[in-house]
Length: 221
Image (tube, rainbow, N blue to C red):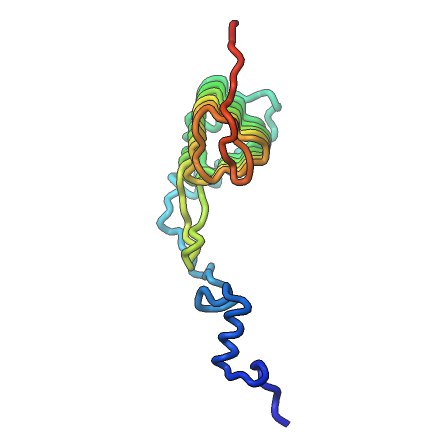
């Protein structure tokens, strides 16, 4: 007894392929059907230069993991000092909480009187520039590294992030590579920022958009 045909009754293999294409047109948009479109075994980021030796990077990660959590919550000076020792540019009066994490401090600039909250991640494969009097609130993630989704080798993409003077990134926000948040703008909690935002605006959403101008009360003091 012969095995049953894998094709639809009364159809040829060619016709059956056409039927599958009609039923699920997206499956045949790229050669390979439902096989993986990326080859992670071919991934190569050898072109990327982190800016320091592997030994320096490991030493930074070790000291950050040990020293940051052991310093008192309100004692920002030791953490700022350590960041500076590893190449970060940190202004005066900067607040950085013990659970904040910085990937490569030599790629980070933080302006005077800015605050970096608990569990903030500065994923600084590229430059992260935070201006003066900025707030990066708890659990926010500033990301300078991603991958090319059109590249079968999933190539690394690096682009800077800039938070201009007076901006506030509220809690649990994601800021994507290449984004500039304009001066004095506010990014609402849990927003995802994939495109640059203009200055002086209240912005929120996923994707994040400018919603209204930021209105300030006159400071008569």
